[in-house]
Length: 245
Image (cartoon, rainbow, N blue to C red):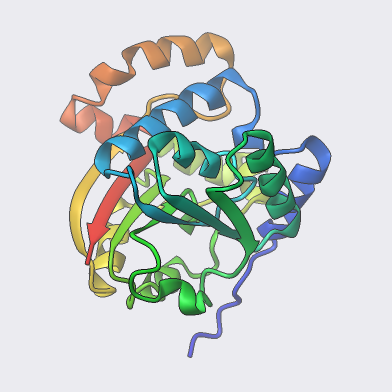
C-alpha cells in the first residue's frame, strides 16, 4: 500500500483562488487563457466522440471545462474534485449555464472512486490538467484499472523547456505545485493500468498567462506550428492522449 498522501496542499490553494476571485486563475477572463482553453477544448472534442456519452470529469475544479461538455451533446457529465469551494462554484456555474440537468458535481478523491468505476456507469473519463497536481499521478492512473471505457488525458507537455522554467521559478507554479511529465511517461502509466493508447499529440502554442501582445500572434501561428513535428514537440504546451479498454 502506498504511503503517499491522497491530497496536496495545492487543494487548499485552489480553494483560496476561488474564494478570492470566483474561479481558478487559468479559467479567468484573460485573453491568453481564453485562447489556450479554446484550443484545448477543440482538441479534446476532436479526438473523442462525446455525443451521447456519459462523462466522468475527474479533477473538475471550478467546473469551467465541465459545463462545456453540454455543448458537445453528452448524455450526462459528473465532475469530481476534492476542493469544496471549487465544487460549490462549479454547481453555481452549471445552474447559471442552464445545464444542471445534465452536468452535476460532487466532492471526491481520485484515489478512492469506489462504484464510480463500475461497468456501464460511464463511457469516458476525462483528466484535463489533473495529473500534474497530484501527489502520486501514477497511482491515480493505476486506480482506473478496472474501468472499461475511454480515458482522455490533457497534461502540460513535459518536453516544453519554458514550462520547466516556470515550474522552477514562477511563484504561481511553485505555490500550486505544478509539474509536467513526458507524454510517453503518461502513456506508460495508462498501459500499465491495462489501457491501449489510441492517440497521442501535442497542441496549443499559447501559454495560459502570457500578455495579450504575445497571445494574439502565437494563436495566429499555432495551427502551423502544430504541423511541424520537431518544433511542436518543444513549443506546444499540452499533450493530449486517448486510451481505451
